Image (cartoon, rainbow, N blue to C red; front, top):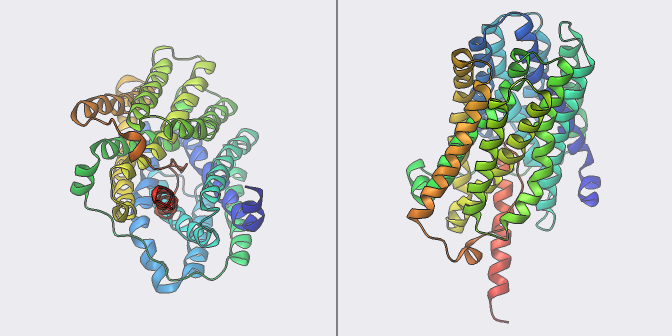
Amino acid sequence: MIQVFTGSWALFLGMFLLMVGNGLQGTLLGLRGDMEGFSTLSLSIVMSAYFLGFLFSSRFTPELIRRVGHVRVFAALGSLVSAVLISYPILVEPWAWAIGRVIIGFCFCGVYITAESWLNDASSNENRGKSLSLYMIVQMAGIVFAQWIVSRGDVSGYVLFIIPSILVSLAFAPVLLSARPMPAFETAKPMKIKDLIAASPLACVGMFMLGGVFSAQFGMSAVYGSRAGLTVGEISLFVSAIYVSALVLQYPIGWLSDRMDRRVLIVWVSLIGGTGSLLAFFLPGNLYIIVASGAIVGGTSNPLYALLLAYANDRLDREDMASASGGLLFINGVAAIAGPLIVGVMMDAIGVNGFWLFMSLLMLAVGVYGMYRATQRTSTDWEDEQSSYVPVSAASSTVAVELAQEVYLEGVEDDEQADQPS
């Protein structure tokens, strides 16, 4: 792991600064919007707008890169991000913030695609899995560090909006100065959704539900905290708990994934996450329970994302794995756009704890559907079918997921070679 970091430290440093900037603006807008008197519905629209831009960018950025190159796309999108971040306190209107969030989502996805392409190019077959793990650690660390900055600043002022703009601008220097020229850029054409559903219904349903869960966590946690009467410091602690647990539990869940029937683990992880969310729903107002519920939901939903990718690969032929990742991410992205909107409606209809009920229903639905699928397709030979689990974050772009697919394929090839008679 240390060798991987020293070989690409500038890229990881740049991505850390980018994630701090992204984590700051997500939490900050929820807090400032509440302070400015935005309605819950208005804030949910603002938060959904990010995922709309993210989904569009996953389709159009690869074409931009093919036309003008990685460096120009990276620099142009970074400039837009910095400009939008600093414009938020100037244009304090829900419509302006929603437009800004679409742009931010588009640009951050494009930046991730470009940076992850460089990371993929800098990785070898021997260290690609370690590179992906370290990249995920950097992502989570950046978001958590952002919450610490929020807790130390004045949400009503301008400084906290200027800081992410500066960090994003600084992030591009180490990346652009250290990145090697990129080879021809290609992404796999997504598999047709109907074919993907036929191959792995559980992975598709699970990815759709998780899109809503992740977007609620990333977009509406600060809104929930403000509406629940938490202080800025308490909200920062709550949001940090989501991502710290996501990082910590990714590896033990991955270890279990390679040693038991993956579908059984999906069911249990989903049910635990859904039950943890219900804990805060039925026992509201206690900070310790809120933080614990956030940790449980974050620690199960984020590893579940990688778990479903691995499970889908178990059901696919090698040549279909890369194209399947694009289809699964599209399914996840569509649900992510709707997630904050539905959370906003539920919070208006039944109160602030609609935030927890929404995530609980989705997580429990994955578990129940997994149990139903077990009655439709038996799995007695899971040890022979399963590929190795590869940790990947739900905040990653298509390139990181395709990089994970390369690790899967390399593992499959190694297994096939090991099975051949010497």
